[in-house]
Length: 338
Image (tube, one colour):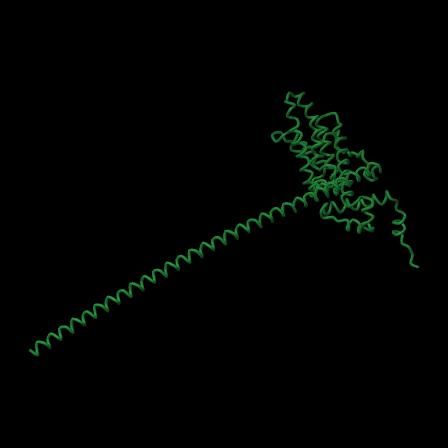
């Protein structure tokens, strides 16, 4: 009898919660590498060394895993930025917010790659754009207070919040691949541009002492599964959305079939009308041809009649001429006898 490997024993001892977490981590890695559409349930099951029914049993499909992954990443990033914005001074808030995003990118590269991809409807928890919008709303409150103190119009705070957050997010997407310079240096340059402006750029920007060396800790523990009741509700919500999607698909198919049937009937009617027109046209052409043939026969008969009449006149003239010639010959004979 073959010995049972340690990996086989660990797989058999794996609890339901552990299996769920394993599938989440496997799915997270595949989604980061291939995206939602490029990842299949077969790949998730094969990477986790389980059968496809196990995936369906825990999550109902890859959509369920994707929804959990997206929710965890968004909660983690939002938690880091929210902590950063809790600082008292406006510049420190800006420094820490930029640093929080770069820290998240550095520590959760796979998660950030998933978030910045074109978000799939299966996530059920919003998109990266909606997350950025949430962060911008928090920055907006900070800017509104600063604008009031400095005599600027606080109504412009939402626009400036979008500018700051958008600039930071796009810089983070660029830094995801290059990773140079270090994140504190990148954060310092971001704050240099946003705080000082182009005309007041510092040649050697650095973070303030209140921010240098700061490492934030997310309040959301992404290493364990969320409460079973919440995940169960999300799965129920996902199933309902899938059922609604199937119903919409069926209605669309029925409408498509009905539309195709109407188009087919219209096409048949058009074809029948075209055939009727073609038949009518052919009959008119045949009538026209018959009339032309009749006219041609009439012309031919008239020509023949004229030809006969002409020949008759010529024959009559020839007979008259012969008669005259004969009469002259008789006269000459008569005179000779005398």
